[in-house]
Image (cartoon, rainbow, N blue to C red; front, side, top):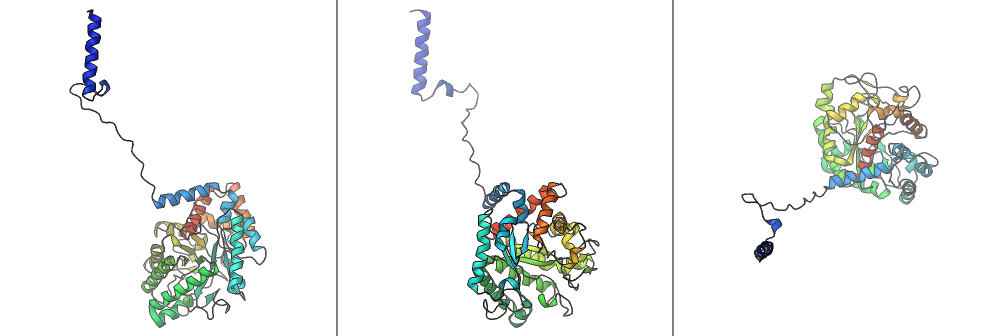
Length: 392
């Protein structure tokens, strides 16, 4: 036999012996080397519910035009005319109803009216509206002031607390939430988190009338109840009204030291922020907080908003008090007060004058006065609040 034939036979016999042992030449490891096992590809972890929710908001935000994003930042008073068409024209984020809008309406009338607003939003960008109302109880009752909607006005928290403690307050909160939800509201601009124990204070009748600790406990329990009921809450009026005068008619300068706010006024807000979670927002007053910014109303002050974001660590929606009030009218020489409000750090602008203010905000973005990332950040917070309220 030739040498080459002998080598071929030996090689064939070697391969047969390997096959009989269940091995292949490719699997034969070099002498002294450890066998390398094939690695299974790692399965990426499933996104958490929070990550999925954030991804949904990012997708929605990226689909919106500049005009639609800006419109979402306006939580405005319902106009006397063209309310439904204005939702489409200005891409509004929400409507706030006042006594004028509920007076002499039956429940069915009001339900149908609110439906017409939501239908208009569905025809626009498809993003449901915030539908808000001030139903604090006592002196501020936009819904229960109409006997067609409730046989009697909701009592003030102060009166309820005096007669039945927190049990009475929470029972009232549950009833209020059920009524408002049935009518089509998803936000009640309450509770009042201001600390006031002096009957001579402007804000006293609307407050609990107790010290900071009792007020913090009240706000804690009420915001938790509202969250459980699916009702959006708004803590007001940051940084705390104290004994200041009414800013509907003029400027109020709060001269108290920062320590007073930190040890008293901030406590109810912090309590509500913690228990309200993603269901609560904060409304900023027009008071000048001299200890932080002696020049601008809190609602227009970047320093006050920075305090709210950093010291109090609040990352939810922050909104202005009504910019139509006299206390802020003089602070914008060109009338673009909503631009100032967004530059300061607000996410939502409450105003009657949205038909003028929205074009001014859009123009400020287009000319570079107002950075686009401010609009995106604010709009993301507003959409996230709507998501938490079950609207998206």
